[in-house]
Picture 1: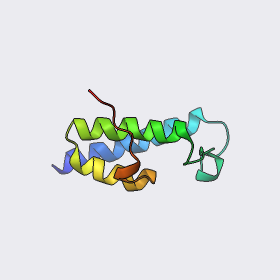
Picture 2 (picture 1 turned 30 degrees about the vertical axis):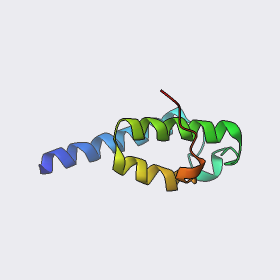
Picture 3 (picture 1 turned 60 degrees about the vertical axis):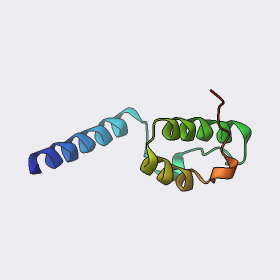
Picture 4 (picture 1 turned 180 degrees about the vertical axis):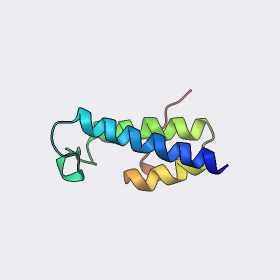
Length: 81
């Protein structure tokens, strides 16, 4: 089991280093252009992800995603199936 966590850690480290190489300049939170959280496209994108998580019954991930993206259950746009 320890080898599993060690491998995950190594993969994460190599992924981050490859991403840093592909980005010109520093990779920091200040460099990101974050869209306005109230915009329709931002809300629709978050709603698509939330709907997918809910429909696949990823309850824990769904419960973590909503507060992280700054929306509550009442503001999620669910897609009728």
